[in-house]
Image (cartoon, rainbow, N blue to C red):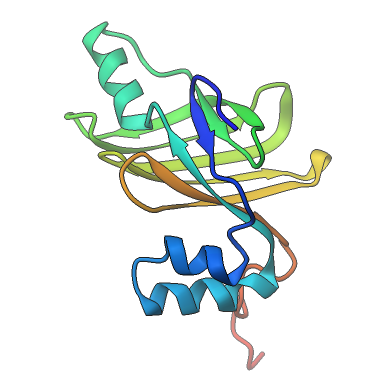
Length: 160
């Protein structure tokens, strides 16, 4: 499945044979297998335009990036409205925060360095919880996460 902005790989990247194909090394494969209990689904997505490329193009025109299109799962695209940007002068590294278009209760954050990027989408009204991990430049592994189990550990001081 593909659009002008993204191309989604077929298959569920939570399955062992797919993990073996996309993991860079045995340690990464093991991490992904262990993570399977805390996610609903995982998919490798190719991005035709990275955040860094959008920033470079905007800088050349003397403009700011105000919106980005992010990939969800299975061909779904999400419009990310940028409220705050923290960019290096080169435009090759930075982060954005904001929300999904038309979803003021949502939260989106994206960080990038060159063509590698990661993002998080939290939209409780839609029950949409995504985490995208960087892979190679122009590639992200998008995961639908369970917010109740994805973050492991205890906040605060467990002795009190």
